[in-house]
Amino acid sequence: MVNPLINKITDLLAREIDCLRELTGQLEAEKEALLSGRHDQLLGINEQKLILGKKLADIQNQRRELMARLGPADADPPKLIDLGRHLPAEQRRPFRAAVRTVAAMAGRLARLNQANHDFVAEALDTVDHLIEVLSGRGRQGASYGAEGVMRTPTARPRMVTREV
Image (cartoon, rainbow, N blue to C red):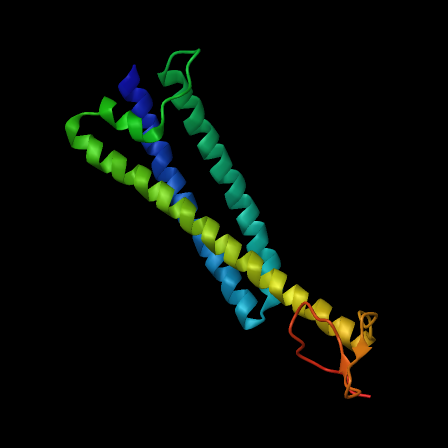
């Protein structure tokens, strides 16, 4: 009974890896679109990311359900890495490699996603700052120093200045 469940879990791991690869490709395409200014591509990329995210969640839920069936009902389900010991010796190494691959890919995916998020946040912050400069907002704290030079407290470096 245990071995067929672990075989199904192994198959789901392979599907999860494929899905993570596709999702990583979409995040790399998103990064390229952001950096190159081809923002018209972002909608299609985001739709694909959403589809792949749902597919990945479904695969992971199926895997978790199978894993829960391996242990006693009142205990926590076993961890993926622990399932390898239930496999024949020749299947243990590939199974553990697949588990490590999933973990590494999930980490890379999180880093790529965070980098894209940071890029967009920085771009929006720059646009907001430029609007403040051009509209004159945010000048409430301005004061003049001893030499008559206006000092403006700034939280961010100024890319554009307004001279009077």
